[in-house]
Structure formats: C-alpha cells, structure tokens
Length: 546
Image (cartoon, rainbow, N blue to C red; front, side):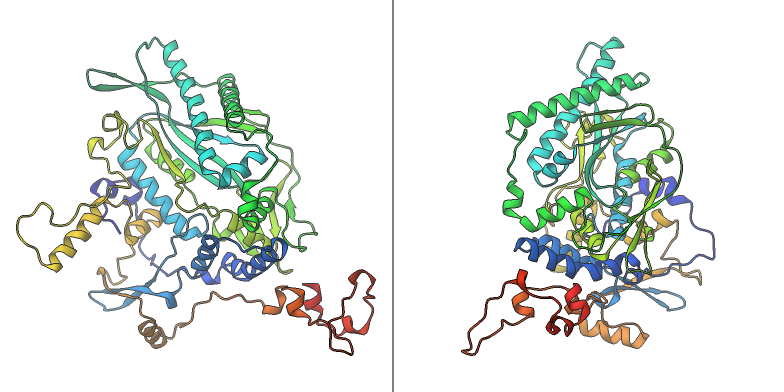
C-alpha cells in the first residue's frame, strides 16, 4: 500500500474529520443482504447455466465470486493493529479487490482514482461530463469484444474533439489545438442490468502551444443543437466502423460459440430477463407521478444517446472531486439491497424511473446473475486517459496539475540497489524494494482511504493514542487460535445456505433409470407419463419444484 503524498493530505476531503465520539467499527459484509443473496444464488446460477448450455462459466467469474464471498471476513486472514497506550487490538480483515462486484473494494478504488485525478492530473480549468450510451445489440457485442470497444470509443472521442476544435476555430484560433479527457467505461445500470456506456470527463476547451507554453482556451456555452450535431457525427463514425469491420447486421455470435454459459448470462442481464422461473410475479415498485422532462444538452438517435449537461467550473474543486467519484463509483451500494419476506431481494434505484419505478425485486439467482455479468473481462482497464492527459502525450507535463512530477499509475519500480556502488545486504535490498514500490504505486493505505472516505482517523484510539500495525496474520492455525480466544467465528461464512437438493442437477444423477425384469434400462416417454402416479407424490415437493 502506497504512502500518502503531501498534496493528497492537503486535499479538502482529508482535512475535515468526523466529530469526536465517532469510532471505527469493523464492517461485517457476511451479514449484509447482498452477501446473503450472492451466497445463496451463486450455486443456483452455476447449475442453471450448466444445465441450459452444457458448459461451465469461465474461471475468472467463478474465482471473482468465491473471492468476494471471502472478502472482509476475519477467518480468511487479517492485519492486527495495537494502541501504544491502552494496548487494545483492532483486527482488519483482508479484502478481495474484485472489480465490478465488491462494493467495499470498488469504493476504495473509487477513492484512489478520485485522489489521483484531482491532486495530480486535473488542472484548475472548467470541465464537462459527456455520457454516451449505446443500442442494446451493440452493448452486448462491445461487452466482450475489447478491440471493437476500443475502436468505438475512439470514434466517440474524435467526434467530441471535432466539436471543441470547431469551437476554437470560431474563436479565431488557427494553429493546432489539443483537448484532454478521462473516460470511464461503466457496465451497470441502476437496476444492475448489463448496460455498457461511457462517462467522459472532458476539459471544456482546448490547449494551444506557443514557445513551449500551453494556453487553455475555454469553450463557448454549449447548447442542445451542438450536442445533437456531435451525436450525429459519432453515430455516423460508428456506423462506418461497424461496416468496415464486418459487424453491421452480423447474425452469428462468436462469443456464444466460445463461452455459451457466460453469453447466456450476459444476454439475460442485458435484457433484464430472469434465468429461473421465480420472476413471474410483479417485479417493480412504482410511485404515481408525471414523467420528468428529458433535459437540455441531451440528444438521442437510433438507440444512441448523448448527455452533456453536467458542468463544473475551474474553482469548484470539491464539486469536481464528487464528480470524479461518481464516474468511478461501485456497481451498487450494499444498503440498496434488502431482503423481503417472500425470499426475494429489493434493489432500490438511485432515482425513480419515468414510469415511477423506485425499486426492482429479484430472486437470489437473478440478482447474483446480474452481479456476475458486471464483472469486467480480466486484463482490460475501465479508465482511460485521453488527449493531453494520456501518459505519453507531449503536452502532459505542461497541462496536468502536478506537471512533470505527475505519477503514472503503471510505472515499474526501479531495481533496488542499481545505482549504488556498495554491496547491500538482503534486508537493505528488501527495504529499498518496498520503498521503490511505494513511490511508484497509486494505491492508498487503508487508513488514508478510510480518512478520505469517512472523515475518520481509524488509527486514532479512543484513549487518544495512535494505533500501529504489529502483525499480518495469514496462517490458518494462528487465525483460528486468535479468533477462538476472542470469542469470534473461526469459519468464514461463504458456503451456500440452501441445501444442495434445492439446486437442480442432471436428471440421470437425481433419479436412477427404471429397470425391467432382465435388469435392462427402460426408456419412458415423458410426454405420456401420468403425473398423478404415486411415484411423483412420494418425491419431496421442493425436489420437483426446483
């Protein structure tokens, strides 16, 4: 975990701490409704996917789900902090760091990105957020085709840059101009459907360079007509791109051929369809009211939509910090999911829909399936720095807030001792390696992230002294001994609560074949079978209903 920089600690979000009397209390994700739903629904999702497609879900999805179910639980390992004065200990459980699934780990990642962007990258200039959504069929294709997704994103950025370049020409600029943006690909909607779209934070203007100095030229006031023109340009560019690459009106589905189980899961999450039979009832909670207006600086065309009405001034740094956190926010907050008496789960929407819908109700399997569809493909970044903010841009050192000292999130640490002529011991080499990794890491220490997120210094003991890290415990025998001594649970709650017979398996494994007098299997026609026979009455009701 990286050390906080002075600029980070000087950020307004880090200076206002919670009032005295507030104390840190360890989170217990295993007690949340979301964790309980995933714990119950994941075995059902795997069984339903295997039964309907004959294939297993990819290993990265199964690994992400299992890792999430172990996140934040002390039996899986923890760090031990101790107060110097009162000698009281605080245990901090290990996290899973799963992208797109865990609200806590994605929340820490949101804080890290917001601090990095606002303290090192984004200068004090005006910014505008552009939100670009896609048609349903294109959302599915771009969700798995990373190369095509990058090409479509490039067409969008060219259309937006053309708008700003034209605006600069109208203001009398003749030479080359350069824009800058930070783009975040989000995969979720408010009801957890698979909805790939982009949130692009653009510098609301362009830079011109003269004599080695970059000058920022703010853009004119945006109007709805300009947004419509930009959307029309982007849609035409994307249409030409799809035709050129052979994806226009393509009937086959290569992803379904290679990953049929995951493709079925994504299609169900994209269209909001259930993967089991538990969603036949009303699945919405509505309020009666009039539809809201569409708003200004918004445009729609053939399934594409572009929203550009969110503007932040150059002096509103706190508002910019909140906007960046919104761009990098987790898929869902745990408090938005509550368990109902009928076994379903209520997912509260952030804002009511136009028809008055305020929440959706999902079975554990369907809620888990939608969460699994939000896990991005491994090795594919969701945050991109474009234009002058790009890592290798020529103007980067001239326009970013930290100048030439701005850290790059993927810098490799230098080899320890490469610049030293004196032979170093193993301990000194290890110490240098840790310090080098800290200098090049964009990650925040746990205590710093908690201070920025909750305005609470978790290292401050109620007695007034400071807590320090004394040990990192990851040995199972030691973990059980410590937790048993403290009277805490020694086993992680990550197994499904439902009995195994609730998950429908292959019929041959559940019911042995009937045998005739010679001991040979008898083939029965299921259509002609009479379901009123006593054989079916003797089966457990939940066996048959499953």
